[in-house]
Length: 301
Ligand code: R5P
Image 1 (cartoon, helix red, strand yellow):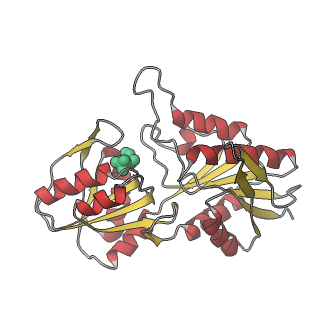
Image 2 (tube, helix red, strand yellow):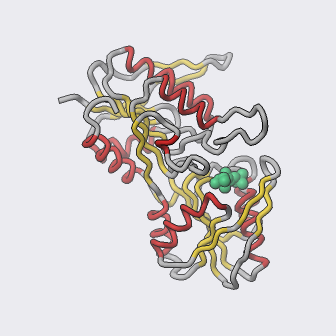
């Protein structure tokens, strides 16, 4: 029978190891370092001929470097005789630029898809991808894709501490997360409207009922601008206990400080990105997704 192994890129080793233990398969971290001029040095950690490879990559911190790693690794895996290459990207980058908003802009989401296809990725597994104008990964990617959501896990965790809360989607695209989350804890949800004026400036509006406890749910926290604005609006409407549940806590620049200064009481995140608020692990749902994928996909997806 074809052997299955996990090979991880930089930054993804911990999660990759947990998934490997769940599936009972070997995990080999790649050797990765940077030359003094910034070029990447990569070395495969094991012989891959005839093996099915689960390539684990974290795109959270240096997405461009991780993309080069992925392309170099995937192409080399095929060149050295590997079978199917399944990419596990717990956080999938570049999906927010999913349209030519201004003339001449590159649609990065499409570029990501092209690069992964050309690099020979046969299947893709990810957690809570930012799908907005593309409604499903299959509209964007040619290879077989499987997405799983951390929202039910985040909701279960939250429910252990708070039995009643208003679930708040800070923008239109977050409605999908709010729906899932509120369904799990049997709570009402509202969807606010967001206008973005720049990388860090957003304005949030919408009708908010009176209440005391709210949980803002979103897929990504980057600069924290969205959460800060949503929290401010909730405070204006009398909410005194404001929490945040998020799948990918990128928390760039001073996001963390801004969020707590805005009065957020707790931040609950997953481990798709290494961060100080990892309360929920996605290892099990990724492992289960891989088992499903491998039982359905015979050969190349
Ligand atoms: C975009 O709509 C995403 O779902 C997030 O709301 C966004 O990426 C958060 O960015 P920031 O934390 O910089 O406001």
